[in-house]
Length: 334
Image (cartoon, rainbow, N blue to C red):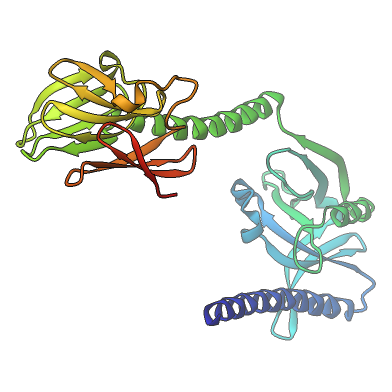
């Protein structure tokens, strides 16, 4: 109970911190807007963020590199204001005759970009002076992009600067198709990797291990049974198909030539004579037909050699059985 209370308290503190940070952003932006409105110079104001042309390659990370300012516009000019201490400082200035604007309306199903207003400005009449490009987008009270507000801002700026219209930025068809194919391939690759990994582990890796009193080791994959000596050298390899085993789920070594093997497809325990390369169901299972197997689905077993008992878990029938060495049911524990 104490741990739950501490987790809830921690979550509450995180939420309060997040709300406080949002409030600080809203308060700072509101304060800057009021400061600009108090100038009483007849100019219009809008809270925006902007970034330079050379920073545009960082899209879509421009949220972090864009600078919050107030765009003041009117009377054939515009400028950006930020607050430093108690004073407003001008960071950028645009003049009507040297500034062109264009609205970029981005349409991309994969990357969500806000509407952007590009200011192309040249502060000199000299033709050799290159233009500087700045990208603006209007923000809501929380400092996030506001597409509708950006459109309204562009409509107002059209009467002041030289508008070049609206440019719809669309993804090229082949890029869109390639992007969707990459997404499909990536998702498919994840499923294939998971499926292949599990199958590879099942088909090629050792899944079961049994040992004899002499230190010999038996291990199996989905297709083969291997016999190692006490020094780890491979002595024999047996094909499960040749032995008549379809799906091995457990094994127990009676000696170096005899194994008990659980075959879940046939639903029984088989005694395998490796020196004869054959496996037969325990005597009690030999009368069971494939339609009415002793076990349903995958099952496991352990051998109590001291009392000559076999304990088998039957997941399909939800049972725990006690059997003798012939496979006869002696007791049902569950």
